[in-house]
Length: 216
Length: 216
Image: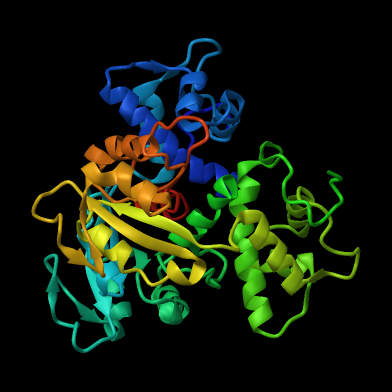
């Protein structure tokens, strides 16, 4: 497995810092925009300029996955985008389930941004008998007691947690027990999960709290 | 302005990397939890353990703002929380406006997590004549044409963008023109803003795209 082989995406994931993985989707998005605008080649300066990171950082990030560009020539936009999509697993569709069908959960299942990116919400869950069996955005809400069987039967790989904070840890535990390894968590807490499970938190308050520093 | 003076929060903000500022609200949250649990002292190991960062990283992050703990003694939980809140500007209330009153905007204005943290949504805007003048979560939706006057009259310091992606850049431009310097953006794009304006993006797709790497 030569590190200079650009098609080798199977290198150990433990080699790559998580922050680098978190930046790659941004690179994919910018490359996609450049491609749509008719650009065939992009420099690390152009890419960095759009993302407010240094060109050196971009070159270092990409170096974990092999050699993508030629010195002074820039990157082939379409090729780099395709390779990054493959590295990230974005060249396929992923089934997801939403747990918690209150106002936030309803907004999430009707969000039009997931499907075009290959994320398909195929199931919705709630604990409340008043909500179970309702149809929301073409999904029949299921009882949380059916989580494990549904995860298996619908090949669900991603859990999206939209329950209130008081129930978030128990829902996350249930998702983990059902075999889910990727969790998008809208509840404002840092949940405890076993190794091998990835949680990304969506927390508007944390975002707000890191902006007031600049206007205080 | 001695750097060792713990009460000196006025040092130049350009000294502190943005990633450090983004971590501080997490520290505040963990400290608040420890305090509620009756703990008076916390070690950098305990703090790091809860946040999955190294104790050395925590000590380095805090060192930008002075000396908070004594070697081997840990941090005084209440004092550290108070000082970090002051540094971040979280010891006061901030008024915010939401622009875009579709399903997502309605979920945001009814989200109960903002007010307890000092973020008060005092105005809601939309462009659609069908929505303007409706009352949503006790707010009368205003026309976007009234943005600048409302920002001034209600002392709004934060803009929350919940419009579809096609309109996000123009809404962000309008907020900037109205004098807003802190923008929480739910639309999935990296907007262009002038220097001095901070944008934090809430983008569930980016979060999902950085998790599939681990399960592909």
